[in-house]
Image (tube, rainbow, N blue to C red; front, side):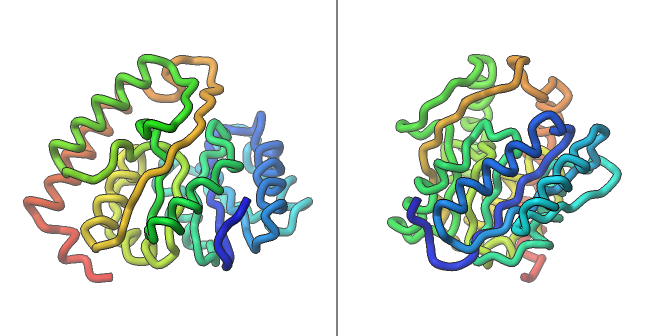
Length: 250
């Protein structure tokens, strides 16, 4: 895998992932070891009620490049990524879902797109024509409807904002995270619309997605969909009505 020169911080948010978090951390480190680049893996235990912290800590004891951040209450994936970023020291920051439905070996594609397009942010996109998906139909429909919703509201040059594999230039997050209020599902959107509004170049890359969870919905329920929709409207309101983000100087 050919990556950039410089250090890469990989942030892995985790909630009740004790069954495979140890193995997945080791797998992620194995992928980056092959690149010969400088890296760190920051696992954020988002208030898990199982042995996620114990299993992640075991990996950290064995691998020097692994850090574990832990807090007792579940505050949402967006909050976990923000906490992970506070502990990161890399020139580039990777968001990687800890279930490894999106395997870290495909990050070379995102970094290549970043380099070739001189982009500041590259996001994995399920809707990219070259993406390969093993993904439940109901999730595909939800994703497509939400993408259309975002196109109408924000006119972003993106087909997908929710896929859990992203690469950021460190500077982007230093400026954008202070503006982010969402702690759960709509945090991706809030990050990306603010990055775009600040003039950073955001582009997409194809992904290979292997949906491993036994339930066709995964962890998403109707309540989560409702909350995501309301948070999305709140982001629109803050951006276009209140002009809230323009008042937050970074």
